Image 1 (cartoon, rainbow, N blue to C red):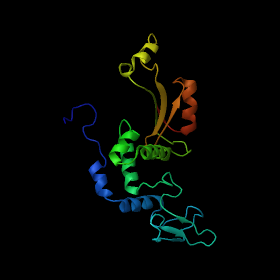
Image 2 (spheres, rainbow, N blue to C red; image 1 turned 180 degrees about the vertical axis):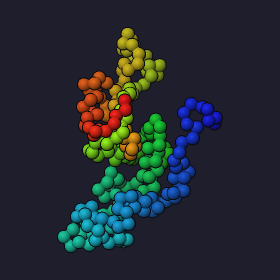
Image 3 (cartoon, one colour; image 1 turned 90 degrees about the vertical axis):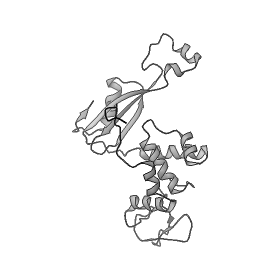
Image 4 (tube, rainbow, N blue to C red; image 1 turned 120 degrees about the vertical axis):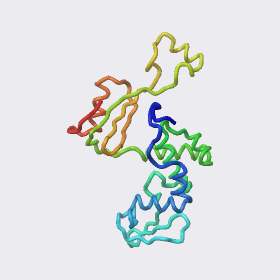
Length: 219
């Protein structure tokens, strides 16, 4: 593709084939999740101590806390958005890749088809990943970008009945949902929220809650 085309002709990052090479099986993906969560030493999610037995014989719960007062058995999924899921770790990591790299998002139906899992599992998978992507309560220190948009179907794609209901209401944002978001340029973290409108009275409280008062804000 020509470099003069609109947008970037090439996006930096790991390709889908690269993800499969990095995580050829569930065991490799599990080891990666463990590394991201604990580093080199697993920590009991119940008592917070690192006195942990690894490689337990249980097929899905390979860790056990050695502390007598605790003795909790756990896995990498315990205490995370993956807890209770029977889907293997490779499915989780590929689903996360698809969801964070999809420019227009990824539907649960696409995950159902691409990952060869049930529609119900795909819906819960997508829902949990979105919850896991929600940032903590700490405000962004910036520099921060703030923008709003409207999400909804194009008028031409609506049913005849819906188009008749919107007759005379104008174009643009009519019939669409307003969404405001902030992005920390330093960490690339994003927070977003559905709002009732895009006036200053509505948007300013959201920005104040999620951006440090000393941060530089670009609108």
